[in-house]
Amino acid sequence: MNTELQIIDYEWDQKQVQLYVPDPQTVMERYRKQKEANALAAFPYWTQIWPAALAMARFIGQHPHYLTGRSVLELAAGLGLPSLVAAHYAATVICSDYQPEAVAVQERSVLLNGFTNVRCAVLDWHHLPAHLSADVLLLSDINYDPSEFEGLYHLLISFWQRGTTIILSTPQRLMAKPFIERLLPLCMHQEEFIIRQETVVTATSMYVLQKKA
Image (cartoon, rainbow, N blue to C red; front, side):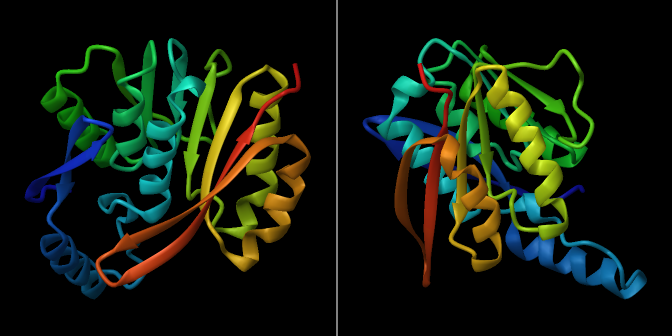
């Protein structure tokens, strides 16, 4: 997707990152044209900063000890805000999405901030490389499709069994309750955030899944 990009500032604890965000009006105009040509055209959700990503970024800023000096992997990162915040603390960060367009924008944001410890990659969590590993796995707002819950659960379990700390952020959706309840026995820390974006208020939950020491 070729579209105009805006630069958004995100600040916390006397730190700052900047990230490129596609212009919302341009995105909508191009989506309408795509829908006219193809009724099945999917909206490019990666072009927005969602409440769960903002909650994840805030959580990382408040609890950097989970990431400090560690290798971090973010799947389905979209524009990559949590990865950019994580870069201030982690030894290495892989910021990924299955959409090449999203990864291209991530790469521009990494260059904008001058990070040398962040790599952007096209990754689909359905088909991850067998060798892929990380000390910390970041996932924000990926549990929105019930048909994906079983596969997603087994993905998280596979990382958890290898000792990976999993940090998951999610809006409080009723349909996702069974999925979250299945993960609660692995949860070592839980926190809730209220995210305000203009006139929209979203209650968002954070979960840290870890093996007991």
